[in-house]
Amino acid sequence: MGNELKCVRSVFLSTLDETNRFVSEVLENKNSYLSGVTTTDKRGKHTCAQIAQVKLDDVINHINRFPAYESHYTRRENDKKYLPSHLNMTKMYYLYCENVDGPVSRKIYESEFKKMKLSFKERKTDTCHKCDVLFMKIKVEEDINLKAELQEELNNHHNAADMAYQEKKIDKIMAQNDPTVKCFTLDLQQCLATPDIHTSVAFYKRLYWAYNLTVTDLGSNVSTCYVWHECIAKRRANEIASCLYKELMSSPNTVKTVTLYSDTCAGQNKNSHVASMFTFLLQKKKSIDEIHHKFLIPGHTRMESDSDHSAIEKQKKKNETTIYHPHDWATLIRCTRKKFEVVEMEQIDFIDFANLLKTYLVLRKKEKNLYGMIVSG
Image 1 (tube, one colour):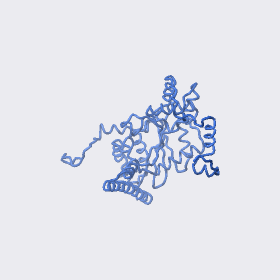
Image 2: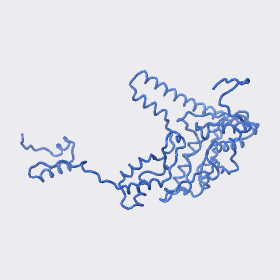
Image 3: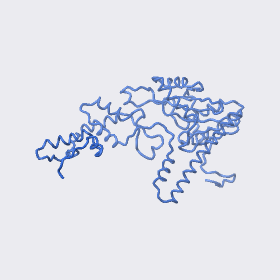
Image 4: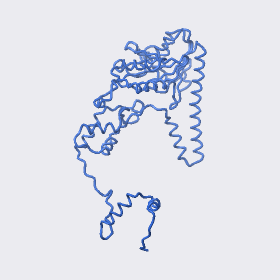
């Protein structure tokens, strides 16, 4: 006890899992006091200086300068808002430091940002919410019987998704071999910012949006991109129905059966306005006998149109093309792939199919037989 023993430095450091710098600083601190007893470690003991409310107000005002948007899918469920996906915390804090004198730390800036119920809009991905929830429930569930039920529900969900993809594959083969059959996939691309520039001033401006509905013919592998901007029309059910009407009306008279695949977005694809357009189309184009609109399982909606959108985004990054006008998006799409056909929609091309439900058509939420009795809900 109290005897000094020599030890190889490297062995001593590896045994205690410490660095040479740590040991040196401890010895230096110990030898600086005659008693050999050092003072108490002061790390984490100091009190933070009170941040002036004026500086916090500057942070809040700066964050509010960026345009925030409601979610297109969940605005009824919460009041959270989203900033554009091309923004991030690093860019925002850099712009903040450029615009104020004596900026607060990034930690404080991020803390105020989180209090404002803001988030950055993530780019569209193929993750499935139901799969993620069931997977986590299975992982934490301890009851064997409940875990088996959850696993069966997950398996049924996967089987339903696989069956939908398999049916799409069968319809695609039919469209390739039978000229009387057409099969399409359709999807609206993520909103296209116009102008697409990355100067600091542009981050504070509300963006002007252009839209691209891609309709892919699975038989001929030709994709038609219907492009318009928000000065002409919005991106609701009537606009989607109008683009589909234009596509189907231009199909050859030899086509008897049409099948369409899309996701289940109620605001765009799965609604009465699109259904009323189909009814109107069957009366106008007598050569078409049947129209089938099939919806893929939510979360498992990967289609050929998504690959087309990915190619457009890659082309934009590859060429570093600057977009000043919505017409520039149409030009970029034309240059992306030879199979792309671009139709720039005009205001006259959009038809009010919703008005059909107020005049010639009746929207019934319950099916009735010939005698007026309700047979199903």
